[in-house]
Amino acid sequence: MLVNLENDDLFSEEEDFAKLLEASEERAVAGAIQLGEIVAINDEYAMVAIANEKSEATLRVSEITDEQGNLLFNKNDKIEVFVTPTRGGRLNASYKKVLKNKRIAEKIAQMGDDYQDKVIEAKIIKKNKGGFIMEYDGVDVFLPRRDSAIKDGDNAIDRIYKVAIVNVDKENNSIIVSRKRFFELDDKNRQAVSAKLTGEQSVQKGIITKIATFGIFVEVCGVEGLVHYTELSHKGPVNPSKSFKEGDEVMVKVLGYDEKKRRLALSMKALADDPWKEIEKELEVGYAIKVSVSNIEPYGVFVDLGNDIEGFLHISEISWDKNIKHPSSYLTLGQEIDVEIIEIDTQNKKLRVSLKKLLDKPFVQFAKTHQVGNVIKGKVATLTDFGAFINLGGVDGLLHNEDAYWDKNLKCKDELKVGDEVEVKIIKIDKENERVSLSKKLLEHSPASEFAKKYKVDDVARGCVSDIKDFGLFVKIDEMEALIRNEDIYPLKKDELKVGDEIECVIAHIDEENNKVRASIKRLERQKEKETLKAFNVEEKMTLGDKLKNRL
Image 1 (spheres, rainbow, N blue to C red):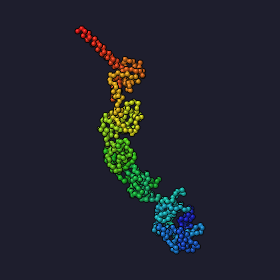
Image 2: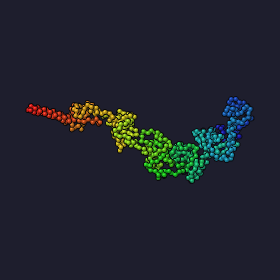
Image 3: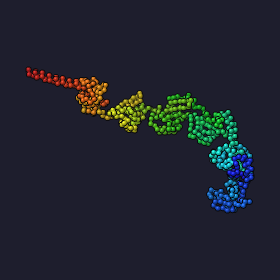
Image 4: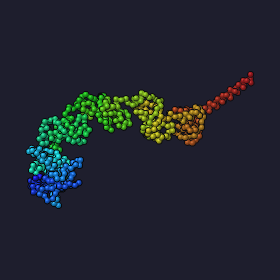
């Protein structure tokens, strides 16, 4: 007699295993394997005659059809079927259930008497009133609800659980399992194994069962343990998913047992000597070492020193170029490079290196190849209130507003935009402070140059007072403003002058390069005195000559 584990009405949650067997015996007719004969077949069903039954049982044709669609049985063939009655009194037959029960019988025979407390992994494939039907190695086993430790709201279908075999009923061809019993066995095993392993601080071989962001889970001697990501390598925190995969066999050292989380604390880096001790002895900040690129991230590069230690090369330490977008545009995985150590923190196991410190600074290279007076092209990198920074290829030079335009009212931020190409002249290279000063206006004719085409020093000019300052006043002559210092205003009185007054002066100095013109009223007066004296002297000479001539 066989127990039909798939009959939802057969078991209730409160029944114990003895009652389950009793119920199956009382209702044997509800599910049993019987020998019948196929008396008719159509496209969907085959009718099977069962001995001592008044009506034939209905068998789906799909159950006796192979993958190619060929029938395995024909009319008048004998066939074993699992027969169950319906509520209407009709009989249903199943050939697949016969095969399933035979597999169960074979599995029971295979296990023999050594099955008690055997731990297996099985998948829940169906739920009924009494518990869950699980699939194990191609056969069905039964997990009673009270032994499942599964809550009503849990979605357990298709999930795999570890369970312990608690009973095998050869007569009824059934295998009963318990998840609660597994927990009891697992706890005893964990305690025994953990006590042994932690006492020995032993090195063990384990299998990776799961990978998480915070580490890898490894099963050691049937007990689960965690290798935290900080315990994976002396390199420092390692991304577990990039270095390991489930099923990998690894060697670990047992550090202890976490009673609360019921798992071993494991380490992989403890298997080797701490290389940071060697680093502390052999290396110092400022040393140049050869490394290889082991990992590239948007924010920098990790480099391998070759002794299970990684250093970090920040993106800002790769190149003197401030516009670097991604490290991969400069470096590739596996590339060997020379770097300078800029920080060693053995306590926190951090080592920082720099690539650019071993390269010439862009300013040094610029200063070697350029000099004051050179005219070069660059692109506007940044605009400020006081001017613009022009990128000259690794070096930024300052173009101050007053060096950009002759017109003092113009500003770079109003006339230029980032990315514009401009031609400039180098007017200063400050090697001490590593600064470059530029001029744009020196590449154009100054207003003073145009002024000098019309006026020369000592030329007399007329203009209007445009501004009065403490140190003098400005006179606008044509389109050029000329400065008359306080000492050059005489004989006019400064306090009697006002903006708009027209005055006459003489050009005293023209500075075309710096776009400056100076004028003088005092000099004009002296010039007039000289001309008067000169004219007087000429008249006196002519009169005396004439007198001498007459006397002779």
